[in-house]
Length: 277
Image (cartoon, rainbow, N blue to C red; front, top):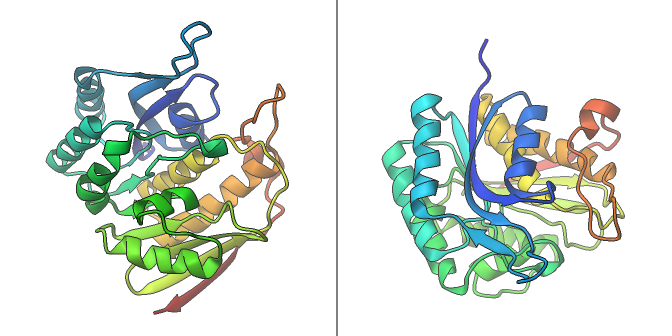
């Protein structure tokens, strides 16, 4: 039996912890056929200190066409698109492709609050890409930016944010509570039902790529036929194990361990609760 086909459109992180690299590692762990479209290469030049090296639209379009024509796509995700132009052109490209199961990780704020989206691109993201999404997966700072800078501090804040973000057009909104105090609670809303996914908070700074890997896992499980609620629950289990076994090679923020669940199993139960609003 052939594996489900999954595509990621995102930036390539040269350190291997996030972006395209994290997505492909996740796809491999979850037994789906992973493909990639690289929008930018992220790597800090030692002399110029330039950190983001965008690809041309021609290169982005060629990669997408190759994946579609040579393999085909069952589900896909977007990550770092960086510029207004790339976001708008990607939205048109996805509309024309007919792909239905699209996970949009609105990569705007990275680890240590690093900026990953140009200022003029936020409106383009809201207007053109979010309405195409089956699921959007903002973290707390990204949800705040999408809602005009609203302060988010509690699980109730996340629930209200999820309701308001749903009005922007996606089928499902997952607001990730990684920056909450207390347990790590994520909130999923589909316009009728609110589902929370709670895991213990793991005391580590080594979470580079956690958001990318989480959304990639959701995409993989959707491609394998899981409902969105089931996909999020399974992905939360996967990423919790990966964070639990995270590590670093240096004094800098290190990666989550993508093989953790396969190697060590899971020791943390994910508490899932659903209510109808």
